[in-house]
Amino acid sequence: MTKKVPLGDDRRAAIADAAIHLVATRGLRGLTHRAVDEEAGLPPGSTSYYLRTRSALLTACVNRMLERDLARGSMEVPAAANPEDLLVAMVVNLVRDRPDDLIARYELSLEASRQPELRDAIVQGGRVLREGLADLLAALGVPNADTAAWPVAAMMDGLLYDRVAGAGTTLATDAWERAVRTTLAALLAGLRHA
Image (cartoon, rainbow, N blue to C red; front, side, top):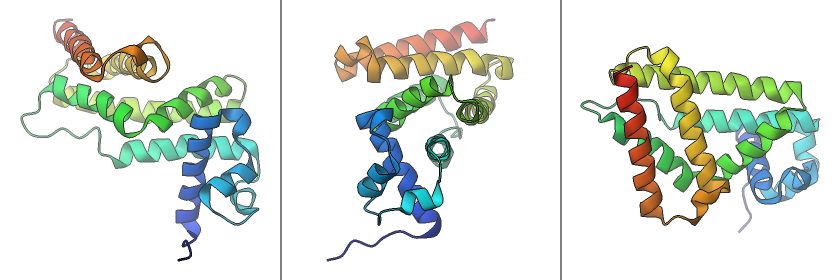
């Protein structure tokens, strides 16, 4: 059976998905247009047709990860939601379901310190996610949610980073999840009383 080759927007998504996977598994040195074509199962030259430059390819990775973040509805607040449960689920689910995205994001964030165009995409994506987090925190009764969203996001990002690339990789899953819950509960309690 022949594999169906994606076209149009589906092809762009397939290219970005393959590029994210390559960055996560091979690092930025392993990311080439040819490697993306091979990883995505596309004809040679497909990636360079859609994304001519390396910078465009890196930016497509950032934009695709943001698209996935927003598509998951991760910032929606269910009725009678427990704030700790929501924030813990956001962190735990990202580590469990999208570790490639996390690793690629950290690789790309470092690269962005040398590439203004990539930096702009990362900053804009972070701004969108923090605005969504502010809305979530406001709906959960956190005062000054706009101001609180930035440190909450930074704390969550630190927990994510530690789990995929730091000492947190050595913890058993249940111990790590308990630590995430304890940390986020303490952070939210402090914000409610600030």
